[in-house]
Image (cartoon, rainbow, N blue to C red; front, side, top):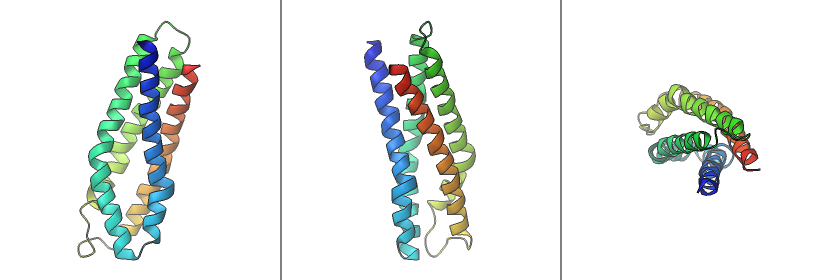
Length: 148
């Protein structure tokens, strides 16, 4: 049963990393290459869509890691899982404090109501998101290491 939890947790976190990596290095670059209104509309739609799904995914990943850490507490790999959990906590804090406020504004924008500095705000979101991706990649690497 523990092996199933370990693999399931690693897969859930790995898929989350893949989605966030894709947003950072594929989707947002595509959106930036679109004509101004199309790119902004795509980012707003992405913010609404992923803004509804990702919080559940982040919290589920954190909860699964916590259960794994408790179940493994006496084993040598527990430290890696605890480290991964700490990084996932950091990613949630980064999301709530840095990314969500920008996303909440951006997902309501249209070409008619967007602020003059919308590109600057999206650029700031992108920088924070790159940092968050690095954090969750490190968490994923620790979970994979704990499997060994």
